Image (tube, rainbow, N blue to C red; front, side, top):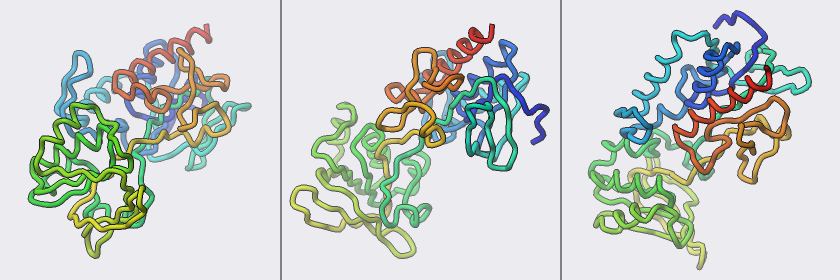
Length: 308
Protein backbone atom coordinates (compact mmCIF):
# COMPACT_ATOMS: atom_id res chain seq x y z
CA UNK A 1 0.00 0.00 0.00
CA UNK A 2 1.27 3.47 -0.88
CA UNK A 3 1.88 5.55 2.24
CA UNK A 4 1.71 9.31 1.82
CA UNK A 5 4.40 10.04 4.38
CA UNK A 6 7.44 8.44 5.98
CA UNK A 7 7.13 10.39 9.21
CA UNK A 8 4.23 10.16 11.65
CA UNK A 9 3.38 11.57 15.04
CA UNK A 10 2.43 8.03 16.05
CA UNK A 11 3.17 4.59 14.63
CA UNK A 12 0.93 1.83 15.99
CA UNK A 13 2.21 -1.74 15.74
CA UNK A 14 -0.78 -4.06 15.66
CA UNK A 15 -4.29 -3.63 14.30
CA UNK A 16 -6.45 -5.34 16.92
CA UNK A 17 -8.95 -3.52 19.16
CA UNK A 18 -6.21 -1.74 21.13
CA UNK A 19 -4.37 -0.60 18.01
CA UNK A 20 -7.57 0.48 16.27
CA UNK A 21 -8.69 2.43 19.33
CA UNK A 22 -5.32 4.18 19.58
CA UNK A 23 -5.42 5.08 15.87
CA UNK A 24 -8.98 6.37 16.15
CA UNK A 25 -8.03 8.68 19.00
CA UNK A 26 -4.92 9.87 17.17
CA UNK A 27 -7.13 10.90 14.25
CA UNK A 28 -9.64 12.42 16.67
CA UNK A 29 -7.06 14.72 18.26
CA UNK A 30 -5.18 15.57 15.08
CA UNK A 31 -2.09 13.35 15.37
CA UNK A 32 -0.84 11.73 12.16
CA UNK A 33 -0.88 7.96 12.58
CA UNK A 34 0.17 4.78 10.81
CA UNK A 35 -1.00 1.26 11.73
CA UNK A 36 1.44 -1.52 10.83
CA UNK A 37 -0.34 -4.89 10.76
CA UNK A 38 1.47 -8.12 9.88
CA UNK A 39 -1.75 -9.82 8.80
CA UNK A 40 -3.74 -8.75 5.76
CA UNK A 41 -6.56 -7.12 7.69
CA UNK A 42 -7.40 -5.32 10.90
CA UNK A 43 -9.06 -7.07 13.81
CA UNK A 44 -6.41 -9.07 15.64
CA UNK A 45 -7.86 -11.80 17.83
CA UNK A 46 -11.44 -10.75 17.11
CA UNK A 47 -11.35 -13.10 14.14
CA UNK A 48 -10.75 -16.01 16.55
CA UNK A 49 -13.88 -15.34 18.63
CA UNK A 50 -16.69 -17.55 17.34
CA UNK A 51 -19.11 -17.19 20.22
CA UNK A 52 -21.44 -14.21 20.88
CA UNK A 53 -19.85 -11.15 22.51
CA UNK A 54 -22.12 -9.75 25.23
CA UNK A 55 -19.64 -8.13 27.63
CA UNK A 56 -18.67 -5.04 25.61
CA UNK A 57 -20.79 -2.25 27.04
CA UNK A 58 -23.54 -1.08 24.69
CA UNK A 59 -22.68 -3.47 21.86
CA UNK A 60 -23.66 -7.10 21.37
CA UNK A 61 -22.46 -9.09 18.38
CA UNK A 62 -22.90 -12.65 17.17
CA UNK A 63 -19.13 -13.20 17.11
CA UNK A 64 -15.78 -11.48 16.86
CA UNK A 65 -16.03 -11.10 13.10
CA UNK A 66 -19.10 -8.90 13.47
CA UNK A 67 -17.40 -6.85 16.20
CA UNK A 68 -14.36 -6.43 13.95
CA UNK A 69 -16.52 -5.16 11.09
CA UNK A 70 -18.09 -2.56 13.39
CA UNK A 71 -14.69 -1.39 14.61
CA UNK A 72 -13.21 -1.19 11.12
CA UNK A 73 -16.27 0.69 9.82
CA UNK A 74 -15.68 3.26 12.56
CA UNK A 75 -12.21 3.97 11.15
CA UNK A 76 -12.96 4.21 7.43
CA UNK A 77 -13.83 7.90 7.35
CA UNK A 78 -10.87 8.93 9.51
CA UNK A 79 -7.42 10.05 8.41
CA UNK A 80 -5.55 6.88 9.32
CA UNK A 81 -2.77 5.32 7.23
CA UNK A 82 -2.44 1.53 7.27
CA UNK A 83 -0.02 -1.02 5.85
CA UNK A 84 -0.74 -4.76 5.85
CA UNK A 85 1.19 -8.00 5.41
CA UNK A 86 4.43 -6.62 6.85
CA UNK A 87 6.08 -6.80 10.24
CA UNK A 88 8.26 -4.37 12.15
CA UNK A 89 11.65 -6.07 12.28
CA UNK A 90 13.56 -3.65 14.49
CA UNK A 91 13.16 -0.39 16.35
CA UNK A 92 15.79 2.33 16.50
CA UNK A 93 15.10 4.29 19.68
CA UNK A 94 17.70 6.98 19.08
CA UNK A 95 16.56 7.84 15.57
CA UNK A 96 12.90 7.02 16.33
CA UNK A 97 12.64 4.75 13.31
CA UNK A 98 10.69 1.54 12.77
CA UNK A 99 12.19 -0.75 10.11
CA UNK A 100 9.75 -3.02 8.28
CA UNK A 101 10.25 -6.50 6.83
CA UNK A 102 9.76 -5.20 3.29
CA UNK A 103 12.65 -2.74 3.58
CA UNK A 104 10.62 0.38 4.29
CA UNK A 105 11.16 2.49 7.38
CA UNK A 106 9.02 5.08 9.15
CA UNK A 107 9.91 7.80 11.60
CA UNK A 108 7.74 8.25 14.66
CA UNK A 109 7.29 10.72 17.45
CA UNK A 110 5.68 8.07 19.64
CA UNK A 111 5.44 4.32 19.20
CA UNK A 112 2.42 2.35 20.42
CA UNK A 113 2.91 -1.38 20.81
CA UNK A 114 -0.44 -3.17 20.39
CA UNK A 115 0.61 -6.65 19.32
CA UNK A 116 -1.57 -8.66 21.69
CA UNK A 117 -0.95 -12.29 22.58
CA UNK A 118 -0.93 -15.65 20.87
CA UNK A 119 -1.99 -19.08 22.05
CA UNK A 120 0.70 -21.00 23.89
CA UNK A 121 1.74 -24.22 22.19
CA UNK A 122 2.92 -27.45 23.76
CA UNK A 123 5.92 -27.70 21.44
CA UNK A 124 5.56 -31.47 21.14
CA UNK A 125 5.79 -33.86 18.17
CA UNK A 126 2.60 -33.89 16.08
CA UNK A 127 1.23 -30.58 17.31
CA UNK A 128 2.02 -28.66 14.13
CA UNK A 129 2.00 -31.63 11.78
CA UNK A 130 -1.63 -32.54 12.49
CA UNK A 131 -3.18 -29.07 12.29
CA UNK A 132 -6.19 -29.50 10.02
CA UNK A 133 -5.90 -33.29 10.36
CA UNK A 134 -7.24 -33.67 13.87
CA UNK A 135 -5.61 -30.84 15.80
CA UNK A 136 -8.35 -28.24 16.18
CA UNK A 137 -7.90 -24.47 16.15
CA UNK A 138 -11.23 -23.69 17.82
CA UNK A 139 -13.71 -25.65 19.89
CA UNK A 140 -16.61 -23.40 18.86
CA UNK A 141 -15.63 -22.88 15.24
CA UNK A 142 -14.90 -26.56 14.62
CA UNK A 143 -17.50 -28.10 16.92
CA UNK A 144 -19.13 -29.90 14.00
CA UNK A 145 -15.97 -31.98 13.49
CA UNK A 146 -16.37 -33.51 16.98
CA UNK A 147 -19.78 -35.07 16.37
CA UNK A 148 -19.65 -38.68 17.62
CA UNK A 149 -15.86 -38.46 18.10
CA UNK A 150 -13.42 -38.68 20.99
CA UNK A 151 -11.65 -35.41 21.75
CA UNK A 152 -8.64 -34.77 23.97
CA UNK A 153 -8.53 -31.25 25.40
CA UNK A 154 -5.17 -30.28 26.88
CA UNK A 155 -5.25 -27.65 29.63
CA UNK A 156 -6.88 -26.81 32.94
CA UNK A 157 -7.93 -23.17 32.74
CA UNK A 158 -11.14 -21.44 31.71
CA UNK A 159 -10.55 -21.92 27.99
CA UNK A 160 -9.85 -25.63 28.33
CA UNK A 161 -12.89 -26.38 30.50
CA UNK A 162 -15.23 -24.12 28.53
CA UNK A 163 -14.19 -25.73 25.26
CA UNK A 164 -14.62 -29.17 26.81
CA UNK A 165 -18.21 -28.30 27.66
CA UNK A 166 -18.85 -26.97 24.16
CA UNK A 167 -17.38 -30.05 22.47
CA UNK A 168 -19.14 -32.45 24.83
CA UNK A 169 -22.47 -31.30 23.38
CA UNK A 170 -21.71 -33.31 20.24
CA UNK A 171 -18.69 -35.53 21.03
CA UNK A 172 -19.14 -39.05 22.31
CA UNK A 173 -16.22 -38.59 24.73
CA UNK A 174 -14.07 -35.68 25.89
CA UNK A 175 -10.87 -36.33 27.84
CA UNK A 176 -9.36 -33.34 29.66
CA UNK A 177 -5.62 -33.79 30.22
CA UNK A 178 -4.02 -31.42 32.72
CA UNK A 179 -0.48 -31.48 34.09
CA UNK A 180 -1.49 -30.22 37.53
CA UNK A 181 -3.58 -32.00 40.14
CA UNK A 182 -6.05 -29.11 40.35
CA UNK A 183 -7.72 -27.07 37.64
CA UNK A 184 -7.26 -23.30 37.51
CA UNK A 185 -10.57 -22.74 35.71
CA UNK A 186 -13.49 -20.95 37.32
CA UNK A 187 -15.51 -23.20 39.58
CA UNK A 188 -18.62 -22.80 37.45
CA UNK A 189 -16.82 -24.42 34.50
CA UNK A 190 -15.40 -27.19 36.67
CA UNK A 191 -18.78 -27.98 38.24
CA UNK A 192 -20.50 -28.06 34.86
CA UNK A 193 -17.81 -30.35 33.40
CA UNK A 194 -18.01 -32.74 36.34
CA UNK A 195 -21.74 -33.10 35.73
CA UNK A 196 -21.22 -34.14 32.10
CA UNK A 197 -21.17 -37.93 31.84
CA UNK A 198 -19.07 -37.88 28.66
CA UNK A 199 -16.26 -35.71 30.08
CA UNK A 200 -13.34 -37.52 31.73
CA UNK A 201 -10.38 -36.04 33.59
CA UNK A 202 -6.71 -37.03 33.53
CA UNK A 203 -4.89 -34.79 35.99
CA UNK A 204 -1.23 -34.84 36.92
CA UNK A 205 -0.33 -35.85 33.39
CA UNK A 206 1.56 -34.00 30.67
CA UNK A 207 0.94 -34.57 26.98
CA UNK A 208 4.23 -35.50 25.30
CA UNK A 209 3.14 -36.27 21.73
CA UNK A 210 0.19 -36.23 19.35
CA UNK A 211 0.13 -39.39 17.28
CA UNK A 212 -1.44 -40.55 14.04
CA UNK A 213 -0.94 -41.43 10.40
CA UNK A 214 -2.94 -39.46 7.84
CA UNK A 215 -4.78 -37.89 10.78
CA UNK A 216 -4.78 -37.84 14.60
CA UNK A 217 -5.25 -41.21 16.28
CA UNK A 218 -4.41 -40.29 19.86
CA UNK A 219 -1.94 -38.76 22.30
CA UNK A 220 0.80 -40.01 24.59
CA UNK A 221 0.76 -38.78 28.18
CA UNK A 222 3.35 -38.87 30.95
CA UNK A 223 2.31 -39.29 34.58
CA UNK A 224 4.20 -36.63 36.55
CA UNK A 225 4.11 -38.56 39.85
CA UNK A 226 5.08 -42.12 38.85
CA UNK A 227 6.65 -41.30 35.46
CA UNK A 228 4.67 -43.92 33.57
CA UNK A 229 3.74 -43.34 29.95
CA UNK A 230 0.39 -44.27 28.46
CA UNK A 231 -1.60 -43.78 25.26
CA UNK A 232 -5.02 -42.18 24.91
CA UNK A 233 -6.99 -43.00 21.78
CA UNK A 234 -8.55 -39.89 20.27
CA UNK A 235 -9.87 -38.56 16.97
CA UNK A 236 -9.28 -34.89 17.75
CA UNK A 237 -7.05 -32.75 19.97
CA UNK A 238 -7.56 -29.20 21.19
CA UNK A 239 -4.73 -27.43 23.05
CA UNK A 240 -5.72 -24.66 25.45
CA UNK A 241 -2.84 -23.97 27.82
CA UNK A 242 -2.92 -20.19 27.97
CA UNK A 243 -1.32 -17.44 25.93
CA UNK A 244 2.04 -15.69 25.54
CA UNK A 245 2.55 -12.00 24.74
CA UNK A 246 3.84 -10.96 21.32
CA UNK A 247 6.56 -8.83 22.85
CA UNK A 248 9.76 -10.29 21.38
CA UNK A 249 10.39 -7.16 19.32
CA UNK A 250 10.76 -5.10 22.50
CA UNK A 251 13.16 -7.52 24.20
CA UNK A 252 16.08 -5.56 25.61
CA UNK A 253 14.33 -2.27 24.83
CA UNK A 254 11.72 -2.01 27.60
CA UNK A 255 11.15 -3.63 30.97
CA UNK A 256 8.98 -6.76 30.97
CA UNK A 257 7.75 -9.15 33.62
CA UNK A 258 8.83 -12.79 33.81
CA UNK A 259 6.09 -13.87 31.41
CA UNK A 260 7.13 -11.32 28.80
CA UNK A 261 4.35 -8.78 29.29
CA UNK A 262 5.42 -5.17 28.83
CA UNK A 263 5.46 -3.26 32.11
CA UNK A 264 3.64 0.06 31.77
CA UNK A 265 2.40 2.79 34.10
CA UNK A 266 -1.19 3.99 34.33
CA UNK A 267 -0.73 6.10 31.21
CA UNK A 268 0.55 3.19 29.11
CA UNK A 269 4.15 4.40 29.09
CA UNK A 270 6.90 1.79 29.09
CA UNK A 271 10.39 2.20 30.54
CA UNK A 272 11.64 3.55 27.19
CA UNK A 273 10.91 7.17 26.29
CA UNK A 274 8.06 7.62 23.80
CA UNK A 275 7.33 3.88 23.65
CA UNK A 276 3.91 2.78 24.89
CA UNK A 277 2.08 -0.53 25.14
CA UNK A 278 -1.67 -1.13 25.12
CA UNK A 279 -4.07 -4.05 25.21
CA UNK A 280 -3.26 -7.66 26.03
CA UNK A 281 0.52 -7.37 25.54
CA UNK A 282 0.66 -5.16 28.65
CA UNK A 283 -2.46 -6.11 30.61
CA UNK A 284 -2.53 -9.84 31.52
CA UNK A 285 -4.94 -9.29 34.42
CA UNK A 286 -7.69 -7.99 32.16
CA UNK A 287 -7.28 -9.37 28.62
CA UNK A 288 -10.61 -8.02 27.35
CA UNK A 289 -11.86 -5.97 24.44
CA UNK A 290 -12.91 -3.26 26.88
CA UNK A 291 -9.42 -3.00 28.37
CA UNK A 292 -7.84 -2.95 24.92
CA UNK A 293 -10.07 -0.13 23.70
CA UNK A 294 -9.71 1.85 26.93
CA UNK A 295 -5.92 1.64 27.10
CA UNK A 296 -5.74 2.63 23.43
CA UNK A 297 -7.61 5.84 24.21
CA UNK A 298 -5.65 6.53 27.40
CA UNK A 299 -2.24 6.33 25.76
CA UNK A 300 -3.18 8.83 23.04
CA UNK A 301 -4.34 11.34 25.64
CA UNK A 302 -0.94 10.90 27.30
CA UNK A 303 0.91 11.46 24.02
CA UNK A 304 -1.19 14.52 23.25
CA UNK A 305 -0.47 15.97 26.67
CA UNK A 306 3.28 15.56 26.15
CA UNK A 307 3.16 17.17 22.70
CA UNK A 308 1.32 20.29 23.92
